[in-house]
Image (tube, rainbow, N blue to C red; front, side, top):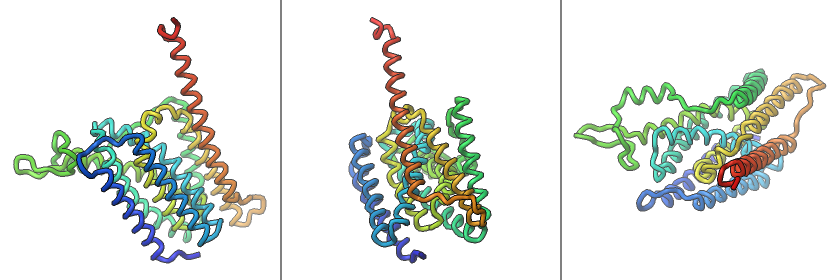
Amino acid sequence: MTVPVWAYLAVIGGLLVVLAVDLWIVDRGEAREFSMRQAGYWVTFYVALAVLFGGLLWATMGPGKAGEFFAGYITEYSLSVDNLFIFFIIMSRFAVPRAYQHKVLLVGIVLALVMRGVFIALGAAALQRFSWLFYVFGAFLLYTAFTIVRDHLKGEDEDFNENLLLRWVRRAFPTTEGYVGSKITAKIDGRRMVTPMLIVMIAIGSTDLLFALDSIPAIFGLTTDAFIVFTANAFALMGLRQLYFLLGGLLQRLVYISYGLAFILGFIGVKLVLEALHASGVSWAPEIPIWLSLTVIGGTMVITTVASLIKARVDSRRSEESSPTGAS
């Protein structure tokens, strides 16, 4: 089923209106910190918006497309949690004032959404022309899953290294020593300069684009419908900013989340290879239905999240018992 151009424009227009209202509500008046309560309301709103859109797909395109959207949305949202660790490191490294962090994330995520749209268009066109790319995507996801588990077992923490774009911006444009409110440029002694705020926005946007190298092949393993791929990415990214503030310190407690994400990527990698074999006429290669994919992805995230929270609670209790205060 070919989705008309106006459907893409309607989704993009609607999301832009929501973003504009979001930005106006949050940024009106003086800059202030984004509270967990406020973040909770917005996360609930964006999740409800995604569910409403999925229901609209169910009514207009059938349960199959709706199932693909929800599977893709949950996958992208789950993988986005891993992005938040790097976002936290970036914010800390550049010492972004908490009152301005929501604006940095918003602009960075909008940039990432535009760049992902280009990625999705290219990926969809390539897959239609070169079916063997499914094997490449599947092998890449399996390798990525392996490296995640390997690095986690080695105890190698995620880190942020400045990419070529950031290094070029630093060399090409003079930068102020500190932040000038939430401005991205400022005139100092008659000279126009960029502020660290712009550098951080570029860091967030370009880093998320690197994460797309994993997430885009993953969602193409669930559906090859470019419209579903785009909308699932868009709705997942829309709620990412508020999720950052809602989780807060909880990020450090999700110790098993990497294993869950690795399992999801590995599962989708196997699914891609099996479906490519099935399409090539290999009789023993089964097709994995979307309901099973949705169950595996959702169940994996629930299990790893609950297990992480249980471990964090047990570790905290043991720490209290072993401390001098707890022993007394």
